Each structure stands twice: as C-alpha cells, then as structure tokens.
Image 1 (cartoon, rainbow, N blue to C red):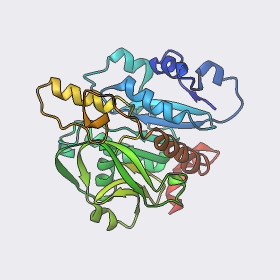
Image 2: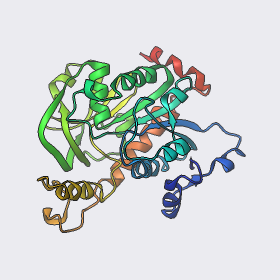
Image 3: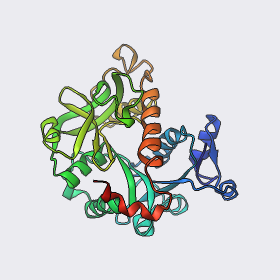
Image 4: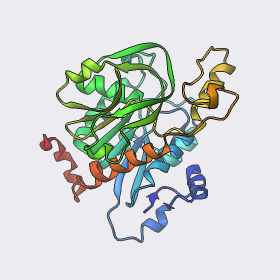
Length: 309
C-alpha cells in the first residue's frame, strides 16, 4: 500500500523511480478507507534528502499512510526556502489541535549545544508534551531521542568528545518485542553524533526498556507508552555518512573516517550499504505493531493514550 504525499513534492518523483508505491492526494480522495495519519517533524537542514529517507521506509508497509510534514513555529530555517516550507510543510501551531496515529521526530545537528541554547527548545518541549495526548506512538531519532530522554525522563546527555561516525553492530536485546521481531541477534546501524546517554541512567528508569545496545552504547529504547527512541540513523542512505565526511573535510576539519563503512576503511572507496534490511523491518514493525494495531479507529481517541499505563 502507498504513502500519500503531494504529487509535486520533490521526493515523489525519486521514490516513484525507485518503484516505491506513492499516491497523490487526488487519487487518495477517491478511496473509502481511513489511512494512518503520521506526522514528521523534520529538524534536519537537508529537508528533501531527509524526506526521501523516511518516506522510503514508511512506504514498505501494507497500509495507506497520510503524511503531514511540519516544522517548529519558532525556528527560521537557514537552509530551506520559505516558499518550499509554505508549499510542503505546516508549522506546529497549524497542527496542534489535530490528532495523529504516529509521529517521527528527526535528528538535528545540535548535539554540541546545551538544550536550553537551542532556539526552539521551549517549543520542542511543548511538542513532546503535546505528543502524549495527541499522538499514539512517537519515534524519536538521534538528537531528538537524546532530547526526549532528557525532557520526558530526566536522563542527562553525555558528550562523546569526538563524533561517533560509522556503522556499528548492536545486540537485539528484546527479540520477542514487536519492534524487534525478525531482527537478527546482531544487526548494524549507522551512527553520526557527538552525544549519548548513560546505559546505567537508562537502566535506572523503570519506564524504559533497552531494545538494542552494544556494550555501554544504547541504540534503541522503548517506553511504557510505546514510544521509540533510536540514537542512530537507520534511515540513512548508502552515501550519507560519506557526504558528511567529505563535507567536514572540505571545511578544513579533521574528521575521523567513519568506522566499518568504506571498503577497507578507505574513504576513496565506495561505502557499503549493510543496514537497509534492518531499518526497513524496524520501521515496518513500528507502523504495524505500535501504530496500526493499537491506535483507535476514532483518531480523536488518541488523547486517551495515557490510560494505557
């Protein structure tokens, strides 16, 4: 089944060329079913690339999904034109009275900043609180995951010193959990971040379960309410880390070569895509088991989600 997006969204053409089932809004209006409503809070400066990455993964479910792209109302983008945002995005103020079956909050290159120094931090906190009464299940990615763990559970972030960049192996700690169903005992995930959270701090929080980790590095967490926190970037394309590496190199920085990523760990060789099957399955599991199987048919009843505890 398809995802429903505007026919002139740049991602539409690229996804269609990849033989991914996407549906225009006009065609969807003729179908007499209730699609899932999933909102994507896109905090990345590379809006179009990020749209393609997440829409590709959401398209692999047997369900029709109605996508709403939105951005914070209090942040002015320096990398995306106002015209583009007006055409394809809504602001949080525009949607705060609506209800959604699911929401994805993307990462953002903000790990080095104190949370309170993020210009839209107050609104970010409002969105996270709002999601608990207006969204049935939320997936937080990378910086958003670390920010949500801090705001919702009081877990402080830990600076890494140098950027953790590469593709790393993690242990499936909850193989019987629906989110991790079908995932190998050891699987791979790309990382690109300067901060993390303490394994011990997470273990001390009774509302959280660790679904995947590697030593002290926590990769996937699940809350009692069915929200998901992923510290890495399962959505990344084969060349995303490569692009980040050469971008930083061109800026005169001394970036570490992403680990376990290039053939022979040589940045002059092609990157190896070794995580797509895991990312596809985890996103499909989230849409199916955490959203579709649990969300009420009357979407207005999403506000009762706190009663699940």
